[in-house]
Amino acid sequence: MNLRCGMPCTARIYKQNTIRSPVCVTASARPRLGARRRWGGTALGQPSQPSHLDSCSLSSNKYLWGKRCSNDVPRGQVIMASSESSMLLPLGLDFLTFLSATVLVIPLFKSLKLSPVLGFLFSGVVLKQLGLFQDLQDTERLGELGVLFLLFEMGLELSYERLKSLAKYAFGLGSLQVILCTGIFTSFALPVGHGLGTLFLEEFAHAPHRLVSIRSVDEAVVIGAALSMSSSAFVLQLLRERGELATRFGSATLGVLLFQDIAVVPFLVLLPLVTSKGGAEIMEGAASSPVSLLTMLGPTALQTVAGLGALLLADRLIMKRIFEMVAHSRNSETFIALCLLTVAGTSLLTQRLGLSDTMGAFLAGVLLSETNYRTQIEADIRPFKGLLLGLFFVTTGSSINLAFLQAHWQEVLWMLAGLVSIKTGVVAVTGQLFGLSRNESIRTGFALSQGGEFAFVLLSLANQLRILPTNLNQLLIIVVVLSMALTPFLAEGGKVVANKLDQLYPPPPPPGQPPQLPLPGGSGGAGAITIDVSASPVSSSAAASSQSSGLLTSA
Image (cartoon, rainbow, N blue to C red; front, side):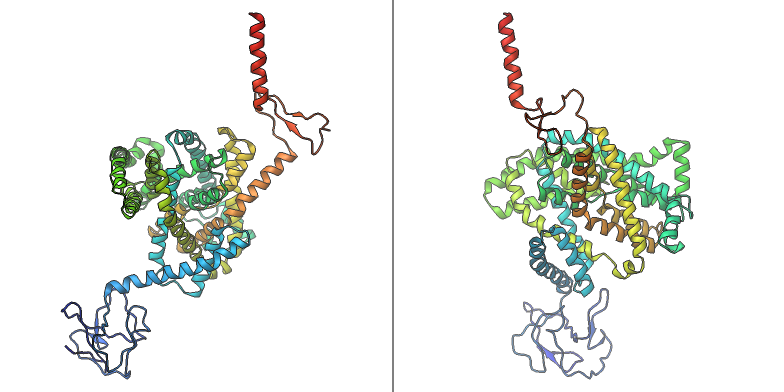
């Protein structure tokens, strides 16, 4: 059957003996979301207008497949434009662009002995400037799956015993870090309109008052809470590459990151209440009667705790049996599908309960770490985790607005320096209160000194609720992204600074431990070799043998 549109070309359309409405799209016309279908350049039901084009090119339009059509279309040629293909093709092209950039850029950064994370960030900046991303929003959503797989893999490597050991760092060091950093950043933004941070940026960075001035207490608290968060994706990936996750420094870092995932929930709950009731009213009510604040947060907290408990119980009782059943089928595709379903399903459930989706992925990994299939699960998800996490880093780099950065580079540099200095100092000082050495506290502070993914969530939500102005939101996002890009250098810098301080000012030995003794013949000066007699297994066995000989003598 011949169907003729307003263009002077004729196309035969076949789809399982059914006829679809033909769509004639020229090379210059691009379908838009929500637009009505066109028949010959006009809306359906209206007379078509003659066109000056003699033919339409389907091959030049990225939303359509087919050969270049002219007035004579070969019999059997299928030319079809469906809404599904127009939605999926831009995302596919973006992923193809990402794979090409990965193959070209990552080996180059590896040869330069630079972190692959920097290569992904660099690729994102370049691809955004070249305009090669067609659907960045959907690509960002796909890249967020990489963070979920990363936290899931971290959970797989943790046992319940090690998770209990992280509680000291999570609820001790983590809570203190979030409270102190939020308070310090908030105090710098107050009083409203004339805060210390506003005056500093106006004086030294010559920042416009409208850009850096704070309009309300709510805005100051949101900024302080957002900047107190750190990046789980960047930090954990870096620790994994260096093999430092099993160290005490790595455990403390992981504990703080886990508490930050929990701490972001109250802020996400309170932000809509701030816009509906007013931040001043909520603060006054909480100060006068803490019961009022508990009344607002109580139902959400109870629902979250009850749902989380039910989820943990169900996973513990059901998931192991499901994995055993699938493993007995000896079908690798089904096993991989179950792994992906576990990560995505648990993340979705915790998100519905009011917690973060990353927390759900981490808990799923912890629950499956006790099964016999932990190694196989980790091997199956590793390719997905690597590619999707790289895609997340690429989309993070693409969020940098170079034009805005060029116009306000002084404000960005000063705010970046303040962010890194304050967060490093807080953790370096408080870390020693929870059993970390000075070296480990300094390294943990540098590793957690950047902004994080949840800063994007809080800032974006505050901007949507009109708590935060758009220009200031863009400025803060650029500061957070640049701090994330500096994570490899900050981690290496923290290691250098900590070791240098240990050389210049050796720390005192722990209480109850004898001082280190120089080896015979050593000068005791620079370059002398010392040993710790209490930590040596030889000394321990010698002490035990002397004690036993003393007992025999007395006997």
